[in-house]
Image (tube, rainbow, N blue to C red; front, side, top):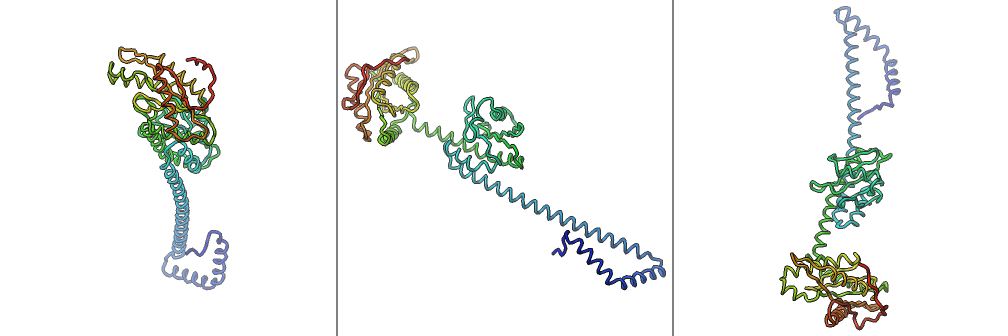
Length: 403
């Protein structure tokens, strides 16, 4: 237990002076006795005692200094440990949030919530490399624009072997999955204290984030592959049924039109019988590719079964669906399918219908489109027919679309 602190120096000095004054007579008597002993024995007791006292005082002062240094080091170590504990807690929070993130929206939400306290700034961007350009996962989207200084730093991160790229107040930290750099965290640390600590913490966060981004990409690929027909690239029938059911319910709430197109490749059995099933597969793949290229990304393209395809057109009335069907019919007919040395001209028949107001019966909707398709096949194929019980006015004539 320490009785005196540094701020008690005056008090200690006063106490020592009071002791000297109080014991002045005994002290003087002791000094006289020492001088007598020195005179009788020839020993230099006074210098020896002075030296011993001086060494003792110096030793005590040095011990006190070492104790103060140890106490300061302990305080600093405690602060450092507390800072590391807070940093680890934040990283654990980020890791837990990212462990449940299987898409870009969930990753963005986790990053925006947990990354700023880790890197010490809200001025950051998380960029993912997509081919020859950067895509913003979170933060300021302008950082992904070519010519922006943050984009330049990201390019240097992608090209360089350094762990961290610094350009003034801008810091680029790579997102590395395996041996590949799949993205970067770009920070602007203007006026930020403890920049080295924040950069080091940012590197730890980048390791967690890279794993999450890679996992989300793999999950998306697995999900897409499970929902996509491997031959035609269109959606599977089971997935299409779920999507159409949801679109019908949404259309009922929003009172927006929804149309459906049923497509059948003409004389497909003859193609298989004459050229073989491999050629038949090539034809189906070509038709599926043409459907995907012509239609909007918001339209559902589905391989319904065999040589039949199904197309859902959200927010599209019947006359618009007929224009789309006519355009797609011409595209298929005008682009022969190359099968080895053969170039096969392929045609298709189309049946279209529109969901009735408030309709949510998926089977009834598909049945009307199928009935229209059956009429198209009966009436010569390579044509478009409309469900006879679809109650929707159609403008005449239908204009021919370019392309």
